[in-house]
Length: 145
Image 1 (cartoon, rainbow, N blue to C red):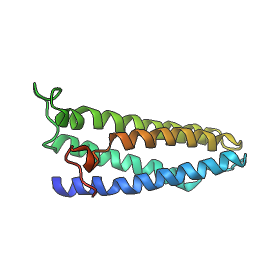
Image 2: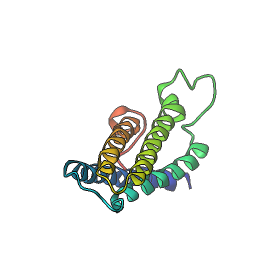
Image 3: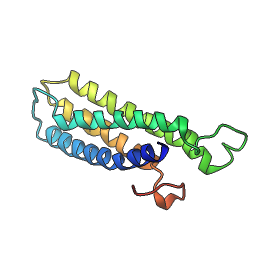
Image 4: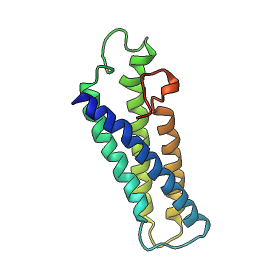
């Protein structure tokens, strides 16, 4: 079960990244064209939903992963510290940014502000996510899929 969840979580990251980038581009267009929008574009909602699905998978993995350990070596070993603390905190911050950005944009419907709000919140979230992913070149045991 652990391997299936790990591969699902790892593969779903590509959809999350794709939809966040798509949302950022869409938000930039709305912002720069100073368009008043009557409803939030669906791509922004899909980005929000995907990061929350990723969160649910991540919570399950956090409790069953052999990489997450609470012992005297956790903070001194970068591998254990990354999975036990750094990855989780970075992703929680990014998910909070996406959620707050979407909520604020939804409250500003009818103005040209939603594009600017989503652009900045989702962009910062994307940067935090990219920093918090255990990419293969970081030697943290991560794989491309």
